[in-house]
Length: 335
Length: 226
Image (cartoon, rainbow over all chains, first blue to last red; front, top):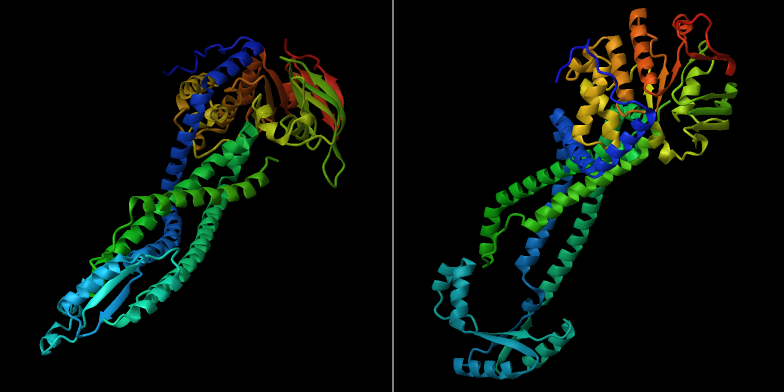
C-alpha cells in the first residue's frame, strides 16, 4: 500500500480524548496475544542476533559445553561403575568352600539344610567341575589348566544372607557360625571389597559434585560476562528504548533469552561431547568388562540425563544473564 | 496538561539549573521554549520526561504529580508522551518501520495494529515509501521525520521536542514545524525547545523564555503570521 507523498491523508484522529480512548481500547484487546507474540518474537529475535555473530556465539557455547560435559562425563563413569558393581544387597555373598572329601550328595543335603534357615535367602551349589569350567572360560588360563591331572578347585556353596538393615555384623556372625560346620573348609564373606568399592565411589561422587558446582559457577560467570558485554554494546539502544517508555522487564527480556540460548547450545554441545567420548570408550570398556566375566557395556546418555543437561544448561544461562542484567541494566539510564 | 509549580532543579555541585519556574501549558496548546544555551531548556524537558527529578516544587502532567511517580512507574508516564530529539536517536541496526514500531512493541500491541499505525504515522511524515530502508541511508531531515513518526505513532497526548530543527536548513525546518502544527490541530499538546528565534517570531504560538534558569518572559510574539 503505497501512497504518493503529495496526497497525505488527514490524521486518523480528531480529538485528544478519542485519541487516548482508542489507544487504551486497542491496548486492552490485544494485550494477551500481544504478550505472547512479544515473547516469541523476542526469543526468535535474540536467536537471530546470536546467529549474526556465529563465531562468537559458538565460542561462548563451547566454553559452556565443555564446562557442562566434564561433570556429566564423570557422572556417567561413576554411574556405570556403580551399575557394573551390581546392587549392594544382592552382592553380599558368603562363599562356603567345602572340604575335598565332601561328596556332591552331601553338599546338596547341606545346601538344602541351609536354605531352611531364616537368615539365609538363597543357596547356590557350584560343583568343582562347574567351577573349573567357569574358571577356564573366563580367566584366560584355560590351556594351563588342561595340563593339570586333577581339579584343584573345591566345590562351593554360595549363600545370599538375609540381612536386616544391611548390618554387616549380622553377616559376620553368620559366617562365624557357618565356619564351624564339619563340611566347610573356608567361609568367606564377599562384602569387604564391595564396601571399599562403594566407599571409594562415594568419595569420587562427592568430588564430582564439587567439580560440577565449580563448573556450574564457571558457566554462570561465562554467561554473565557475555551478557554484560552484550548490554554494553547495546547501551545506546537501551537508553533510547527507556526514553520511549520501555519497562526494565522489556529491556531485560532479550538478554535473558540470550542466556537461555547460550545455555541450550552449551548443553547440546556437552551432549555431543559426552556421547562422542562414550562411543570412543565403548569398545575398550566392553573388552575390559568381558575380561571380568561381565557382559556389561557402556551406553549412550539416556533421555532423562540428556534432558537434565539441556534444562540445566538453560537454567544456568538464565540465572547467569539474570545476574548480569540485574547488575548492569540499572546503571544505564538516560541523561 | 503540564503544570510547573515553583520548580527548582539543582545539579550536585553547581548552581540552580532552574529556579522557581512556574507555568502551565493547557491541553491542546502549542508553545515554544526558548533562551540561550545553558538557560535550562533541556533541563526543563528532562524534568517532564522524568529523565531528571526536580529538587523542589511540584510538577503535574495531566493532573498527575510527577514528583510522586515511583521509578517503576516512569515508563508508563513516558508512554503518554512523544519525545523528539535533536540527534534523532534512531536505532541504526533496524529498518525505518521497526524504528517507528518500537513504542508500539514496547506497549505490547499486536502485529496488525502495529502495521496499521506505523504506516499511518509514516504516511503523515511523508516517508511511507522508505519503511524498508535503514536510517543511515536517509538524509538528516528524513531521519528527523522518522523520529517524529516514532514520537506520534502511539498517539501521545503530549509532544516534547528538543531543538527539532537544530541541524536543518530553513525549508526543512518549516516543513517539520508544519508537522507539529498538524498534530497540534488534532488536539495534541506540543512543547518545543528551540533557539530558532526567527522562526518562532513568525509563528502565532506562545513563547516561554528562560534565562539562567529563570522564566523571564511568557507571551505571544508580535507580528506573528496569522
